[in-house]
Image 1 (cartoon, rainbow, N blue to C red):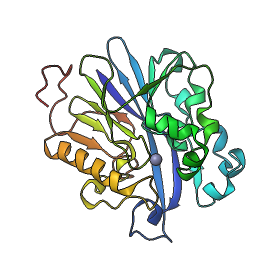
Image 2 (cartoon, rainbow, N blue to C red):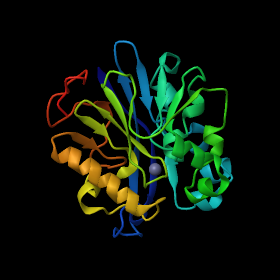
Image 3 (cartoon, rainbow, N blue to C red):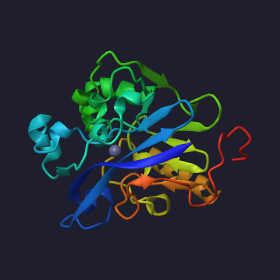
Image 4 (tube, rainbow, N blue to C red):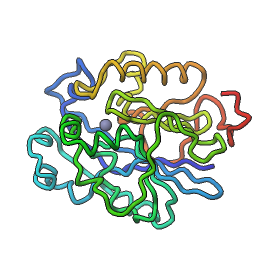
Length: 256
Ligand SMILES: [Zn+2]
C-alpha cells in the first residue's frame, strides 16, 4: 500500500471565509490536494483537483461570476499530468465542490466514481446544488459508473480502506481511512479545526459538521493521523505515512 499526495491546484481567497474569525481582508493561498492509493491490485484516486480549463477565469468558465468573485485559481499541473489516469481503477470523491471534482473529466470514464448517495442526490437537485455551490458541469453524466454508497463503506471488502460518512460541510461529505491514516477531506480545512470548530463561514449544516469533526477528533485522539482538507502548513505533495503509528495494513486484524 502506497499513498501519495498530489498538489492539483491552489485557490487564493479571503482567509476569513475559510476560518471563522480570521481576517477577511487578508488573502490566504490554499493548496488543493488529491491522493493516489496504490494496492497490489488497485490504483485509487481520492479527489481530482481543479479543472484546468477553469483556472484562468472560473467565473466565466462556469458562468458563475458571483461564486468566484473572491477567488483566484492556480494550477501547476492537473491530475492528468501527474498520474497515468488510464491506470486508475476507482475515483473516490470526498464531496462535489469544484476544487475536488473539477478534474473528473480528465479521468477515463472506465474508472467508476464512488460517492455517497446523499451527496450525489444533492448534486442532482437544483436548489441543493446551488445552496452548496456545486457546479454540475464538473460531474455531468458521461457514461461513467457511479457507485452510490450509504454511510460508512468498506471499499475493497478487506477492511483496508474505509469510507466514512462525515456530513455537514456538504450533505454527503465523506472521509477516507487507510489503516491509521484518515484523509479528512473538508470536515476541517485546517488541522486546528478538529479542536476549535472554526469552520468556513459556509456549510450545508454547521451542526452536522461539528459532529463529523468530533468523530475525526476522537479518531485522532485514539492515535490515528487525521489529515485536514486545505491547511497550507501541512499539505505538501509527496508520499504520505501516518505520523502517529506505522500504517497497519491490511486492516482486518487492525484493532482500530
Ligand atoms: Zn469543500
